[in-house]
Image (cartoon, rainbow, N blue to C red):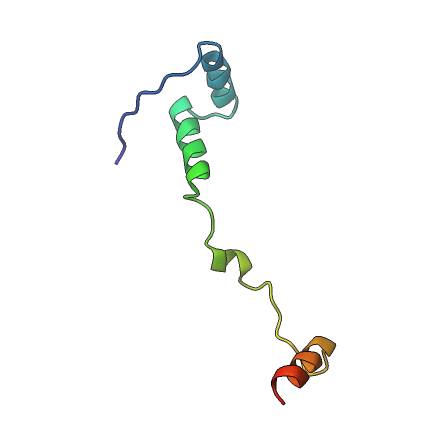
Length: 74
């Protein structure tokens, strides 16, 4: 559901913002909404989603695995 929002901006920035929005083929409202979404992190992936698939399983021939196994498994 959309709601109206009244904002106050400097008179010099309004024409620039309108021109910027027009050059991207969106309304000024859409531009402001997208900016607010980005700042609020609404479109940001979760921590798990950002790291999913980035780690690989350790193998027994990995020197780090051997060092940790020696330290903690004996």
